[in-house]
Amino acid sequence: MTQPEIRHLLQHGQPGQPATVRGWIRTSRGNKNVLFVEVSDGSTIHTLQVVARPDDVAEETRKALTTGASVEATGTLVESMGKGQRLELQATDIRVLGPAAADQYPLQKKGHSLEFLREIAHLRPRTNTFGAVFRLRHAMAFAIHEFFNERGFYNVHTPIITGSDAEGAGAMFRVTTLDAQNPPLTEQGHVDFGQDFFGRSTNLTVSGQLEGELAALALGKIYTFGPTFRAENSNTTRHLAEFWMIEPEMAFYDLADNMDLAEAFLKHLVSKALERCPDDLQFLNDRYDNTLLERLRSVIAEPFQRLTYTEAIDILVQSGQKFEFPVSWGTDLQSEHERYLVEQHFGRPVILTNYPKDIKAFYMRQNDDGKTVAAMDVLFPGIGEIIGGSQREERPERLEQRMHEMSIEAENLWWYLETRRYGTVPHAGFGLGFERLMLFVTGMGNIRDVIPFPRFPGNAEF
Ligand code: 4AD
Ligand code: MG
Image (cartoon, rainbow, N blue to C red; front, side, top):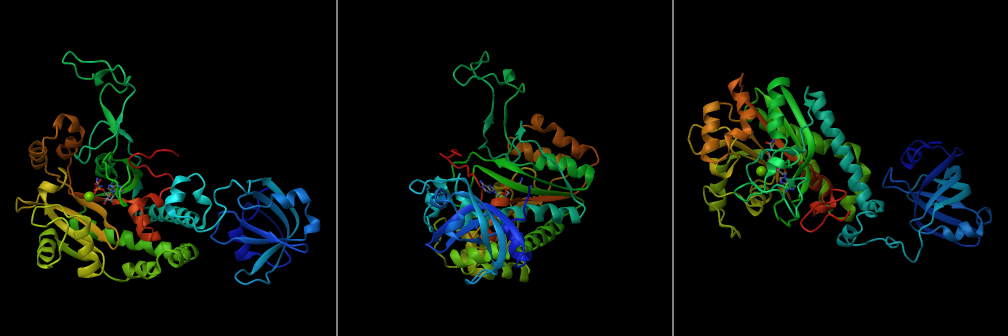
C-alpha cells in the first residue's frame, strides 16, 4: 500500500496518528533502552527520526540497522523531544528491507568531497546535496513547462538524430550502424554513408532550433525542451557533452520582444525556485555558498542591463583590467569578459545584443550596418552566458547569401529555406542551457554536479 512520504508527514502529520515510513537509514544509534534511526525517503531534505525500544526489535534486525540500509517502520507519530523536528515516529515494528554492509557502503560518513561523489554517481543521489539538487532540477523543469503553457506556447518534440548541423559549428557526435572496422567505401575511397541506416550521414543534434522554427511558423509560439549533444573537447566547469536545452521560438517577435521574454522567463524560474524549494535552497546556501539566497533574490529584483556588443567592448577595453584573452571589436567574448561585465561593472545580469556577424551563426538576422547581427546573449553572475538567441533572418535572399558566405550547403537545408519562400515572417527565439540555469539556482560550482549522470570527455560510466 502507498504511504504518505516524509515530506507530507512532517507538514501535515498530527501526534497520535499511525504512520509507516519507508526509506534509507542516514544514521542509527542507540543503547539498552532506546534506538534512534534517522530515515530519509528522498521526498525532502529532512529526515524522520524513528524511535524504538530495543525489546521491540529482533536482535538480527537491530544489527542490520546501519547507514544505507533500506527500512520500513510502523508506529505512531509523536511530538519530538529533540530539537529541529516537530514530529518523530515511535515505532512498534521495524523491518530491514535491504541491508547495506557497514564495512562496505561508500556513504558511511557525511562530508564526502564532490569529486569523490562524482565517482559514485549511482549512489550520490542519496546524499543531502544531490537530493536537494535533483529536487530543484525537477522544480525548474516543471516551472519551465508551466511558464510557457500559461503564455500560450506549444511544446514541440524535435528530433535527436539529425542530418543537419544547426549551429554550423562542427563538433557533433556521429550516429551510424556501419561497421567501424570495415565500412563500405565509395569509388573515391571515402566511407559510403549512402549505405548507412538512414541512407545518409547523421549526427546527434546540437540544437532543436531549426525544427523549432518550422513549428513556430505554423503554431505561432513554441518551445522545445530536449537533450543536445556537443563533441567539443571542453573540460570546463560550464560545459557538458550532453546537456538539456529549452528553445522557445516565436513568430512575429523582434529582438526586443525576445529579450523581454528571456528576462521574464529567467525571473519566473528563479522566483519559483525560491517559492517552492525553500528548504533545499537553505541547505545549499548554508553548506556551500552563503550568498546564494541573496544572489537569487537580487536577480529578480532588478531589471537586466541591456547594451550592445560594441558598447561592451568599449567598457572592457577602457576597464584597465588585465584579461587572459585580450579584447577588441570582432573577438568572441570569453567567460572572464562576460563575468567582468556582470560581476564587476554592472553588478547585475546583462543582455548583450548585436554581435559581429562573423562570430555568430548563419541564421541570425543581419543588421543594416552590414557588420552585426540581431543576436542576444544573457550573461549571469558566476556563470557567464546562460542564454543565447537572436532574431532570425527571415529574408530568403539574405539568408541564402549568408549561408553561401559561410560555406553552408543550401541543399542540406532546403526545407529550412522553404519556410522563407512560403509565408515568411519576422521571428525570434533563444536557447537556455538547463544545466547553466541549475548552476545558478543551486550555487554549485561545477556543471557535472547538477545533472544526474554527466557526460564529458573520458566519462560515460554510469
Ligand atoms: O548559444 P547556443 O549555442 O545557442 C543555440 O544552440 C541556439 N540554437 C539557441 C537558440 O537560439 N534557439 O546554446 C544555447 C545555450 C547557451 O547559452 C548555454 O547556456 C548552453 O546552451 N550551452 C551549454 N550548456 C552546457 N554545456 C555546453 N557544452 C553548452 N553549450 C551551450
Ligand atoms: Mg552561444
